[in-house]
Length: 149
Length: 409
Ligand SMILES: Cc1cc2nc3c(=O)[nH]c(=O)nc-3n(C[C@H](O)[C@H](O)[C@H](O)COP(=O)(O)O)c2cc1C
Ligand code: SF4
Image (cartoon, rainbow over all chains, first blue to last red; front, side):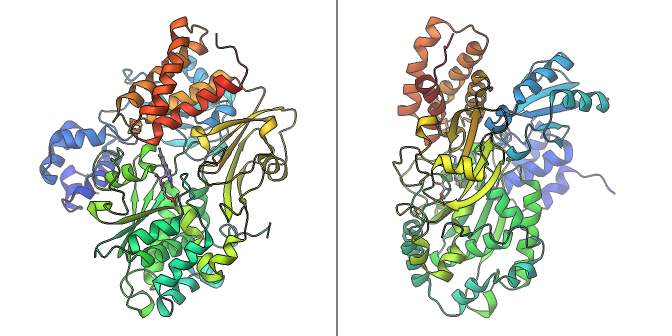
């Protein structure tokens, strides 16, 4: 398989305003984030300013604008997951790695508190590098983290 | 008619990836009848007669909305199905897409043809990956079978339909923010007027309806609006998908008539409280909703505007006495801070300040200054923000302060 390039992704789409978000999502899926160089290519292709591309990319939580940490843990803090104990999970993960939720400077690991994913029946929800775990307990979270390394 | 199921009737009985299953239970019959014999005007009359109110939260009569767009003589019009669904604790629309996507597609087709739209969008929550696959599969099957596309079932009607997926932003559920998002702009709300029915997507008349709302259309047009209006509460008739969660025995989606009491929902559908858990309060309508105490459980769940306890998206969260209220306050304030779109100052700053205070409250470090600031912040959120999001962000906090007897030290 030939490697994907931004140019190739762009050519899949007509240069219409309505395609900007779909392209951002494709680039994010392919490379993990949208870099400034890629954003510049997009701005040229769609004939809009670089800031327009960036203000979109930074607006949506599913699109990143810089290289992410190696391990990304996301824990839902929606009302249902909270009733089911997600705040204990957040505390547990913070303790396990010695990090604070929301901090973005550690290239190895990052913990993000996220909004409801609509899986409230199976909460608390924890995601590790994109993989979703349901009904996670504190000891379950520990197991997941230990077995990941 | 207490047991009537309109939306969930065939869940579990049909394979969402097989259009034949849906057709076998009478699916697409209403659409067939519509394109072959009925005229859009009479279908619209049935929707209006049904008294169906929007299920997305605002509770506006959908018939009136469609009529505004139908009566416009502009050529280019759009229908958009709102499936952004990101109100915490709500996942009814997701279940519609997952269990019976063709019912949704048929409903969207009927709504679009009624207003004379040639193109419809499904704006799908960016996190709903499995549902995207199901919807794309269902859509291509309905095109292959002639229900969607040029010349529907050999008639003169044509309709293009497209799934447009968001990328994780709660505010994009607000209809004007949703329009901006499809147009490749930041998903921030627009000033109204002009309303989307007048100047919507790309400036053309657009009707936007929630996924649950339009899923009622096939039934209403088939059985008549009058029949529908007899279900449930007279001022907001029909069935409703309630998302029940929290400390009850059975959580999940329940289709029941409107107008049932909160207590009945918790007791009869939820099977009461989980073993050993004692009821504290319930939150009605997601993170944006009001808190209700034990003595308010007889309150009826209705969608009518101005209801004492707005039902909103239909989420009911039951909270028991073991839950730490500080966790809940952090959940609410954290959510609104994260999701504020930042367009207007009172909301951008207000949600931020409220979250900061909630953190200090959690650590027992709330100052006198914080206490004094809370009422000002709540007032600013309730009265000065650009869109209803700002107002929503104050609801649970205010109810916590005023209704729950907690010491805010
Ligand atoms: C902050 C905010 C979020 C909203 N989120 C949704 C949503 O996720 N889904 C939805 O259908 N409507 C949502 N709405 C309501 C829509 O603006 C709109 O009223 C609705 O989609 C119209 O459809 P209906 O008449 O069928 O309810 C939201 C409104 C606001 C103010
Ligand atoms: S109230 Fe909040 S969400 Fe609404 S426009 Fe203002 S900043 Fe954006």
